[in-house]
Structures are given as structure tokens and as C-alpha cells.
Length: 328
Ligand code: CP
Image (cartoon, rainbow, N blue to C red; front, side):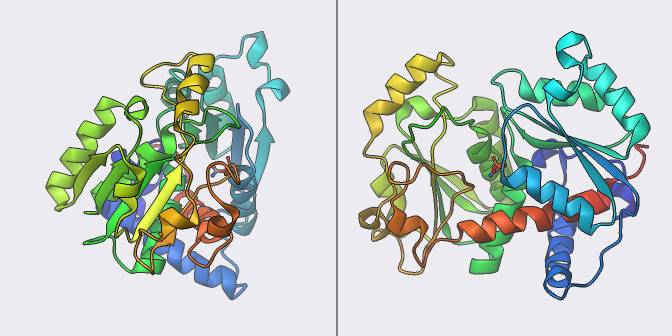
């Protein structure tokens, strides 16, 4: 299993089997223990990972850099303006050239209708594995950290009410990749997911179809509601976050106008009281405090947002350690 993963891209969680994803999660747990004990983990000695960001990042950037340091390798933080992308370097050049110098290429490109295609085009020409640090469709490392966090707090995802809910935010139109990857990954592990959103905020039809097929195979389920309150009632896990109505429209001003109709979709203490007493509150961050979530909730006892952020590094270390090396 370990050898089978060398050279594999990690672009969408759906492309790895549940058994392969479990191997990565188990390794992430071991690496987290070693990190706590300050034990060395030199699994990628002198290996190089290129990090290419078309979009800003706090957690992804710093956790990938720390991951490579702790695995004994090195990383290079790149943005399009540092490269010759505007002057003609295509995804083919990026894939062929960076993989001839190093051992992995990680890319964040969230532009709607472009990000995933760009990453796949780089992967087509790269001789090293390519990692999706978030695109317009998927955020697979976030979903893995989220699953790891739920397993730490709840031991299992089975027979729990797990809620992914839309929430209002005003900072910018957030990608739909977090709810989509969460839905795909959790249904691969047999979870019962309740998806809550105002009608304009549906996810991509193809993602919904795959999630339902996953659930059918694993004994999980996918329920949809258009009421945040209904979703929160008796929930074990709530993950209320904003995303854009991008399947309905990608016009930025229309997105803002639609979202403004649903300002009441905030995760506050009143809504948290509808959930089970031991329910956990999740958010991938950054969050719009006071708009998307009340301070009392995100800073409260039920919040696991810092566990999620920390687990990003552990799952990334696991997947990098399992995959980096030449493609077959
Ligand atoms: N959750 C997440 O991906 O955070 P950043 O956008 O800061 O990387």
C-alpha cells in the first residue's frame, strides 16, 4: 500500500480509495504523536516541494512549509508574479520544469472554472506528484484535516449527525471547495451528512451525485435542508461556513446581492443550543467574526477550529511522505 502511493497526485480525495485515505490518516496520527514528542521524521530528506499560490493563504502556506521542514526536505513559496506566467509560461512549462528540479508541486488556484483545470494540466506534464492546495472544486487536504479532527473528538463518523451549513459572510465570495471536499470525503467513510443552504447556494450537481453514490456504498446518507435551524437540531458536528452561489451565478455583484438576503445565517449561541450539548463547532478559517460566526461560538468550548488548523500540517506530512518520489 505504501509503495503503491509513491508518485500519486492528490488533487481530489475521490481519486484515492478509502483504504488509501485510511493509510494517510493513520500515518498522520503517528506523525502528530512524534511531533508532540519532538521526535525526528526525516522521510523526505533533501526533497524539494514547490508551492505555487495564485491566491492568498495563511494556514496552507505555513503548514506546507513546516511539513517539508519537519520531513527533512525544503519548500519554495512561489506566486505567479515571481514566475514568468504572465509572460507565457504555460502549465506545461510549470509541470515539466519544476518537476525536473524537485520532487513535488503543490498549487492553490481557486478561480471559478479555471483552478482545477490548471492543476490537472500541470499534473499531466509533471514527472513528480502534484498536490491540490485548494481549487475551485476541491480542498482535499482541508477535508482530510477535518475528518482527522472529527475522529479525534467523536471517535467515529458513523451514526452521528454531521452538518455542513452555509453561513453568511461579507469579506469575499468564498470558494465552494470546502463543502464539496467535506461531503465527498465524509461519505466515503460512511457518514450521515446534512447539507444546509439557501436555495441559490447548491453544490455542483456532479459532486452531489458522487457523494450520494459514495453514501450508498458505505451506508452513509446525504440530506438537504434549506433551514440552518433544522440542520443544527440534535447535531453532533456543525460546520457552518460561507461559500459563493457559484453554481447559480459567477457574477461577483450578483453573488454579493444574493448573499445579502441571508444575513440571518450566522452561527450564534442560540443556534448552537439546538445542537447536542457535546456538539463540536468547526470552521476551516479564515472566518468573518461577528457575521459568519459569533465570537462566543468560535472562541467557545465547543470550537475545534485550532485543532483543524493544526491537523492540516499532520495530514499534509503524511500524504507528502507517502507520495513524494518519481511518478511511475
Ligand atoms: N483553511 C485554509 O485553507 O486556510 P488558508 O486559506 O489560510 O490557507
